[in-house]
Length: 168
Image 1: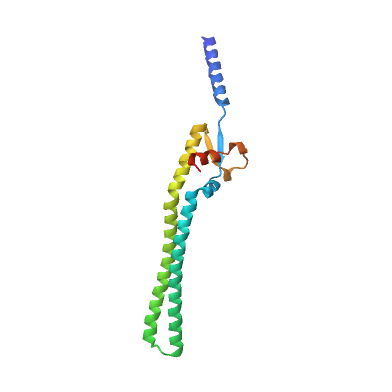
Image 2: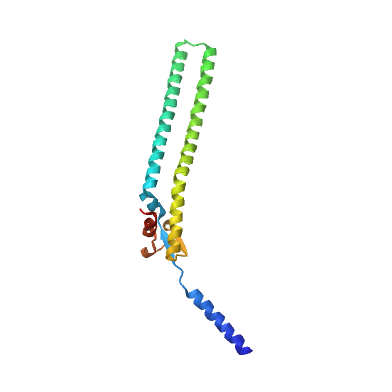
């Protein structure tokens, strides 16, 4: 009975040593560099730039209109061609216009962020799917982001495999 227990313990220890000796396969990828090279990302960025320029032009037109009205009101006040009551009414209109400009600026930022997420999320999902497929096909247990690694061997870079999977 004691021999059986000893043999069983030895077999369990041997099995554990064998299992821990199996090498885990690690890889890394520079996803920023990959995304920069992707034509879909370049197109999405171009679309975002077009939208940003359109919104900036609209915002600049609003500011120009505000400045023109402000200068006109200031000129009328200095010349004394506007009554105090009309000055107050026009000043309130300018305050309202200024608030509209500030709201537009905030809405513009939100709109650009939402559009960026909408355009880039499908691309990021595609890249993540390709990374997972490369990991499974090549037996990687872990794939890390390159910028978080302090040391790595170039042979562990899976970027080329992911590019091939994405057909770039």
